[in-house]
Image (cartoon, rainbow over all chains, first blue to last red; front, side):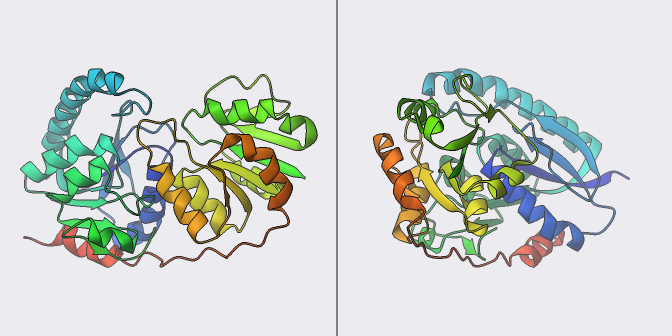
Length: 165
Length: 150
């Protein structure tokens, strides 16, 4: 029988900080046999008590200063992530994916949804008035889409507010 | 006054240049953290450290980019902050958090880098509101969702 895993997808900086805070609360609530697969563009280690069975690291999906560089990088990232997700789904029983954004999570979340797995996404805690690009995409198909600032209720039709990480 | 400058994981050369131009590290005791850019012009600077908390504790005032990880952590520690949104990025989302900080009077927000020195002179004298938040309570919802059949 395949090992049951949850994918954790997050970017560097504040995205990782949100995931770190979530995992501290979530890990004790999970059965002991649940392990994690990490999907990230961060080089800093996420501290988790559960076993991490695999870690996939990518360069940032979006160049923060150049749209052209982003467009050049995206096809490579897309194919690499699809290949890696295929490997993950062959080797493990995916329960779902949890993401705190940003773009590094889009392909893995779409892949999980296509397999009928659960997708749980957080809009960034730095968003008060406008949706992020990742949020706009993930909001359309997430099983739960959390916002972390009440003001975003006017931006997203279906979202859940349960406070801030 | 001891000042710690942090720009997180993203380059923010405009802020570092402004500090240089205004000779801030010649006047105050200052340490700079930046993962990118030329740090050789500063007396005390580093790119990355595991124990950034010790520098947070060391400083009287922290100049930080408006990255949420840094800002929320520092507000929770009730540090005196000057928040500088990085508007040179492709997306301008740091402005949303900076505006939130300003609107709620949680710290000083520097929209114009030439005013940095003037802000340093006033920040210690200013009174700010204490940051508070609704702690996240959605963990059970996540667990239920992950283990539900439909």
